[in-house]
Image (tube, rainbow, N blue to C red):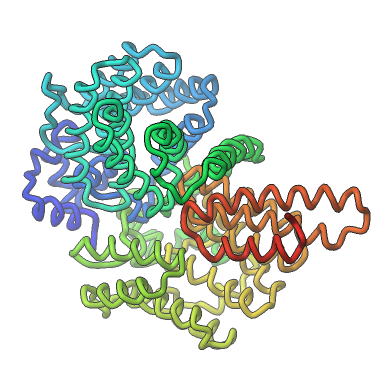
Length: 617
């Protein structure tokens, strides 16, 4: 199922014309060519089109041209600098981005306006920031009316600009009614048109916060209603997005009504804020941060796929251009060398031939969905399943998988692979498979999309191109050994995948890489390699907070506390023992505050157990 067909189906389901969807983004003829499969958009146009349809582009696996990948990396780094509040470096990076892109495309110009507005906001230059916002919106023909009415559909960056305008109204101390009316209109748009849960929740949380803040002096009960909806969404989605702002607003509300979120004491609320601050500070100390500026998508460049897979197969460049490939006019060795070094992008026809020659036939689409089908709801169900597998809510996993299977064409290898992967996850969770049976089943599932699994498995490095599901399955081999107590083999498999992400495919994929680092932190700790365990835990937390997520945050902190506890128990020197004990208690307290907030009962109980067992009061 190609990108064009999916876009066209979504557009027609929502009753949107090509003219309305493309307005300000590209010409109607360009959109027609994208929908018909004649043209592939760059990543920014792709995200703009998808988000105007209310969906999140994270559901796609992207194979980009090298320059497009570099621009995306630069945007990831710019957004890290905003998160880290490194404003001087941000200005330098933004200038570099302007020079690199040439600022000839309006979507890049719009993005630059957004970042310039954020910079002005930090300097309290609110009028100048507003002008950048208005200028950015004009790039794609979004005009602000005096009544704040939104007409047409908005891309992610357009919606971000409108939200930033709402923030600036608050900083400028505009009338509460004006701020309320503005955010009310934005929230109405978000609830009606941002239909994808992964795309919806951040904007919903932000709008609910500003509505709550704007109304608490005049309409306290209405304000509390917005607050409760926002904080509930933060907890449901296990995000840290606007968490600090909501907690600070809670402290204000408690002065009026002490019963709001009454299950948390003032001390626990303060601990949560301290934990947020401490980990923001800790994250700035992570070394080689630039190696972790990954996207949530699985993102590759065609150049690195060709280079890495050719290396794994042991093919020379001469072998790649010999025989029938040369007859198809894909160029000589010099051309291939430029492609592999990122100095030239292959034509679509050339790309297809190279992928076939490398045994990657069927994976050459630039924009691929994990599941194949015309009904986009299957992608959303898949992401819901992933959320519940992370929290190990097996009742929901089984319910959603049953609903998904009804919608899937099971004759497609990728669909079949995914279903079997989740069925294996369910069986593994129930403990009904031995380690050997589990690995054999994983190999069988991998063989649905990989021709020579045994050969791939025997290689010292995992370097060839793997889809998102294939990576998950490879990681599950490590999990099988991990669960069976064979930590040496588990580490071997996890480290091979760590190298895949760290050295060969630096943009792909924050979501999977984070899970891998968490698994490594666990198995290192169980092997007694506490320093390595804590290092991977800190990197897991860094990636969590960079993604504004909290799925593994309290568990990562718990693991650090657990490691300090284990070191404490082995230490003979009483002075050092007390130092480790203090660290252990500090991190357990932090983990407990997060576990209680996000309702992770298993971690809460584990912490209570360890504090009593290790006599840490």
